[in-house]
Image (cartoon, rainbow, N blue to C red; front, side, top):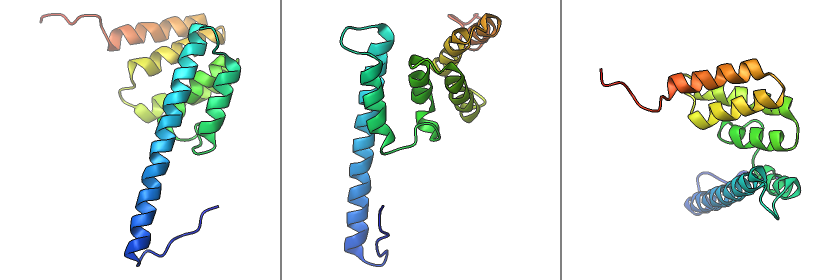
Length: 143
């Protein structure tokens, strides 16, 4: 639990700002660590697996709610998919698509296609991949 500081004291304001900056730096470092571990685990690299991803996501989740904060929804969905919880991953990635509307990123849509494939919904996965090609063509026509 944290106590509220006195807002009228300049020293307290400066201390609060400094602590918030330190927390932001820590959360950013934990996010990058979890991202790297997930990428290694997804690639099947030796020495990186679900246990490592669980550990790193646990550290990050001590500071932020990755399942609710829009910034971390894509990361959380990838973790859920790696753990075999495709339905939870779909819930998170759908929220991420809705948050990024009207133009979700290509990475978000590709993750959604992977999740749909993991659920066995190949028709919807192919439809999602077609949408990705429509939104992000390899090259644009001249006119």
